[in-house]
Length: 230
Image (tube, rainbow, N blue to C red; front, side, top):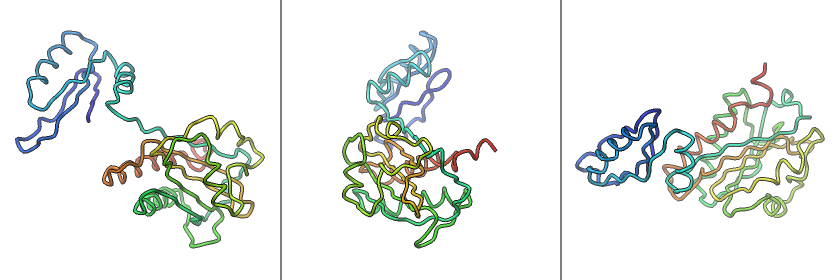
């Protein structure tokens, strides 16, 4: 379902005669008159349904959230402020866990592209950094279960001493469809960076590819930490 929002009124593409998909539209404009006129036009189109009206962008997002008319991808990253990211140049994949096996390579490809753009080099094993990634398949506050079952000494409890603390990683709830990417110092097995992107994976393969690329790109936009300040 689509809820496009513009500074003034909503503009959408008219579906062709062969396009039977319905359009769900949220009208956004600060004028009652304009919204009324746009609604009248849209509701006269077959297959187009006005799901609501909003006076500005903030109002539109709030109404879209309450009405379930769209999902907003939320990307967050946290890191160990005591880690020296300048010392890391290579990385290896340790483990990737997803519900759909096809998403394993999709996640790897998205992260590989993001890190290559930052000058990092992937090696088969023994990289400076080891990467673990997972798809969240049930709402949960922590990733204890995953790491407890994974073994090998990797785990969210093993933070460095630079301020990457318990509160940072346990206050948020990881929701179904979220992708989490963890970066560990290979030698110490300490977690140095974590990125997460919500509403990224679903049962739609085509959307998964687009959402992954978009989410991971945002995740690593300011990577490595501090690079944007230089």
